[in-house]
Image 1: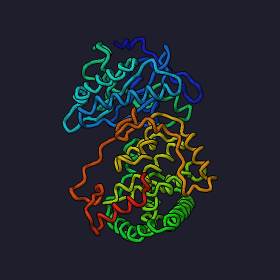
Image 2: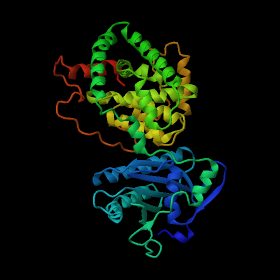
Image 3: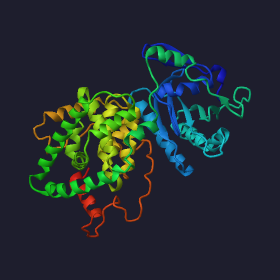
Image 4: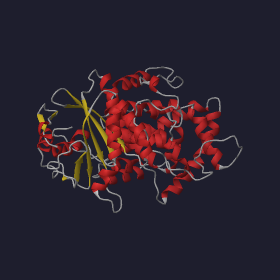
Length: 445
């Protein structure tokens, strides 16, 4: 059992200031500062090292709605966290887990805690099977927190304990002094990457249909593939320059609206379809650092928002690029969310699978950056795909990275929908043409 009176969890800030957490309230308050954002509907595991419980690696995943998914998810999260720490040569001595969820309907925070109790138990079992104990599991809901490991009603009453007022803890003061800020929530990240549902979506889908009719036969021609790739990268470069030259605006919504206005429907369509090609996409991934990174990220976000209607699967490419660039420049929150959304758009998209595993495993993106830098000097880069330094051997037979956090399920498509998988049934309609674009452009991505 956890003895809260003796629980110490020191945190080293960027200024090497030592902050010690002694109570469950301080532990619950620390979570946004440890992650860099306030988690929503999430399960979080954080590694502890040494006798004093120094915080180490961490993994996070949205809580699946089906309780039958909890045991395999707990196993994969535990493997992902422990495996990532071991790769860095620092196996954890323990783990602290958080379950963050808000009440649904008339549900109370205490009812949320009780509903998630089986998840807390399978997390403890999964970590224990790897010989790493879970010292504490904290549930945060409706402005209160509960612990699943402490039987003491005096410090952990059944009705829960109110969270500390934001900004009043010693950790909040230390992070503010160090210049560390709590970033946006995953929900805010997803909002910037979600396809349009406005009236303009119909015009964008029509532009995608028209571009598909123009581009598919060119890709299949002898020299058409290279021409389309060159045109795609040139257009992307010009639009990035256009975005970079735009005046700065305040607020993410205003910034995204400005980027949408600077990107025409036909331009977005040409880029979305052009990026379905594997080599073109990987050359575009070279815009990952320095002055090119920010306008590239803005462009990939804008293209993800344009993958409307039947073109939902096409979003895997711009979402993967957005996730890669965000992760490369240090924003793991957006990186993880974008890559997760890419796999929701196309679960078989290998580029997103591998990046998702590496990003969630807290690996260093620098080896991938070095590989892409080297690609620039490869004379045959347009024809030769370099192997990215990612743990391909960790893929299981289903194509999912072993030990990676499971993905959210995509919403079911309507029967016969245009975005469904290709069949052998001949057709000349829009549904078959969209699938043909994907199959001819992807190059077995």
